[in-house]
Image (cartoon, rainbow, N blue to C red):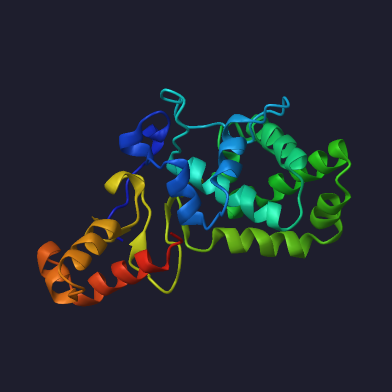
Length: 236
């Protein structure tokens, strides 16, 4: 697949762990309100704790994300859309960090941790009185499995650690991937590793010429087209 390396050193290291602004994360995940991500990263002023334990400490107040943060935001947003409360997700995250011994439990493999995570969510639902979540993970276990499988699509997990190490956002553009060890985790064409944004800028500068963009980065015209169409499909 071009780049298969360990990202064990990802925590605290933007070079190995990927790097995204809140706005970039919102754009990549299709989240219309970037402020939601900020709240999940730093908590609410009303005293609610953060849901996600960030990979990097804020620099002058900026809330940059790492690759595992991005995958966890994707997880939280997905379950929020299903009606799971923030309080329940917060409780589940706290318990999962204790049980799994990792700061990013929502970026773990669904195959390796599915059963244990069901238990975590059941406890969180009971503690918060979230009847929807309790029903989802106990009485409708099959539905919970479906949700997990949707989240796992396009994500490659490290077989040793169970942690996410690459995400391909859509089957429509199979060569576009986010890998924290390539282009700081920005969307790139693999295995070449050229950022899709760079190809897109060159394509625009060359008056929409795919051959020119492809020649500039020494990739095929099909890959140049894939990169450009991926960028065009992202929200403004």
